[in-house]
Image (tube, rainbow, N blue to C red; front, side, top):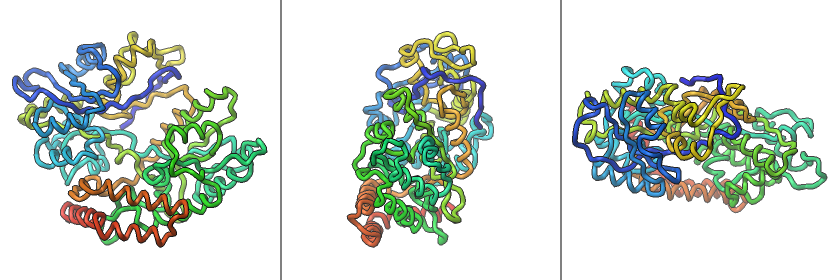
Length: 505
């Protein structure tokens, strides 16, 4: 469920920050939430300072929900340490948001499956604001070994796409590409046909960076039919996507472009900021990234040259041969983590229902606006065009920004914007939801994955980079994957396959 509002965000308004909820808490005792309507909420802080207790946003949340809320902020720099320590000692709050740590911390995953937190699936239908956003896909990808240990934070399911310089297409008389063949032709034209018309050989097609294996190329591989990190074979075996024929077909396609100069030569060492600067400077005309990034590239270019001719085509429907339209998730299937309810704090079903009632009231348009924009008249106002304008940026940064990523559904309301490309990007991301491909193993448990995946992924990434720059041929890449599969990767795949069979047998 997403609500589209007739109000906009001005250029000087919200700079969305990531706030991850976690922390260390009270350790229990006293009256229950059901008796007092008091809620404690562990929260990691991503801003320099904490909001004042009982400040305007917290007070507005309390008024809207009818609950007295105490946020416990933990600086992000040691959030992982504090959260895992709190879980280990069972000194928690009524609500604990894991953020991305729910996917990366073995301690949190083990606590979820050990019975430390409530399984809430059977209760969801009683809370309309929660059940409205937990569809079958969110339920599947938000469960762990078949159990929903908390309320998933819901966000966009697939944000990536292909950004192409529209002004360069126009200069060369080219159409917007919608297939991999057309995209390759555009990349070569951008590399060889002087798309900016300056008479110099100083442009390329794709401008990639060192996270290509995990981000840019990974997204491209989905068009060829590869899965999202792990996928299910026709024989009901779970395998790493980087070893599949579809992934390797995509690699061959991309290396052909690299060898033709249509991908920046040094991409395996390019940092994110260097990539952004190069795009803003017109060194490359194709970026595989979050569709919303068009506005950021545009802003960077305009800050250097207000008269820049830069224009972007936002593309979300690239297809390859007879592979149906698809897009790999870049957001764990639209799940930003879990709001967990510890049994040490939420002691019985009555207390659980009180906490779920609070979370349900948090997932309303009113509270979403409070946590996104602040209090009308104090933090923002509507201008003559119905757009939201921040009254004082420093006050907003201090009092509102820390709460933004605490929203139960990150994209519950879409605020139309007068910033170029923002509305179009939101529409493109919405369109992709029906085509999203998620990670089949995300909801399963593998001890080998928890302990060894980082090393496996690093080795696979290294083999990918070596193949791309010509240090390995495809046989060499396949040999590297076979070596991984003979060791830890094979164990991970076997454990995931067994877990899948147990859950679906």
